[in-house]
Image (tube, rainbow, N blue to C red; front, side):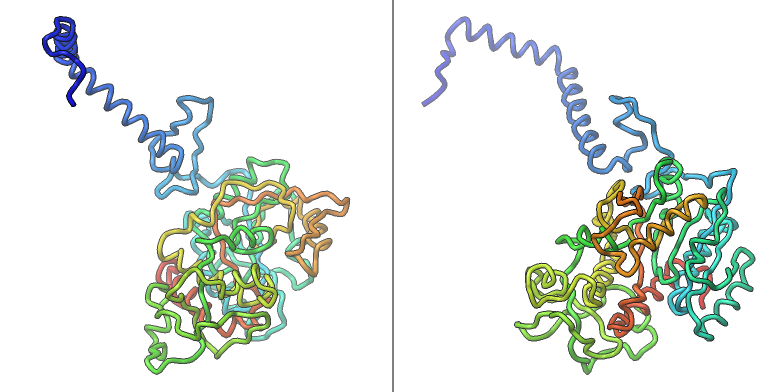
Length: 415
């Protein structure tokens, strides 16, 4: 069957002529309107999903918004200069020299003379280990901006001046992004009500459940046996941090990481299995199985670290990120936070109130209220837990991997 329109009808002929004349007269206008509509749709999608790709703030054309001078999500974003009129000092509780040796590379890059924000770094010894303390003394002698505070419990909260902006960085921190310090400094200056602005510390405190999500936590499993073709005996392979160079996991089909799992051997790695939808990994087992590990066991932490290094290599760290989280109802880690010296006493009280289990749900100030602490999700930090290290984390090759990354990407000079 053909069209119901009669080709011999006068009105039909005239209608077709009018349409032909319209397109003949206005072809360029029609084309331009199509381009404008299509371009607007594309810009709207980009502006909503990833505004940092645009050289301007699209929302400012529709709303009264101020263009921020710093976008932490952006590559090549506008430079946020170091604020003037006050000093910025890092307080670093010091535990083990092997881990702080990695952190040192990041601290050096953030010193003022290297175009960073830190006017000074004060190490607060939390150990009596002679080897580590001698190492720290030698390190401080090499850098004029480094200093050591008197050894005393809670000195990292007591060693403060009211007019100084402090950044507490735990000495076991093994990674943080270039923009992490500028991000939390900027947010603290814009949030006068906050006692502290914490960075986005991977899988610590209230963020642990957020970072357990599928696609963030990858199903890494511990290798169970040394392989004959294991080439980690060579220095080059031992210093390789890339997850893409790891072999595939091999083990029994019924294997599950259970509660109280012991390290298979010293220096073992964690590997991805062929199937990624199983519930055998520690995080999945801790959520779904009664015999699974607790959320604070070393196996859960190991899985998070290997997942993080995987995302670091594949440039998918955005999966961890979010804008701001003000006054979360559960504990916020003290691993990496920015605060004014005048607030140090209140913060010390908060963390003393919740000492013994900082990651518990009992997250209150002395008056029973939730502490006014903000988490800035745009700057990532990875922390090697001192509590979990002797229980199994030290039996992995994680520290070597973080050290290898720092040597390749961060350090201005080798150890």
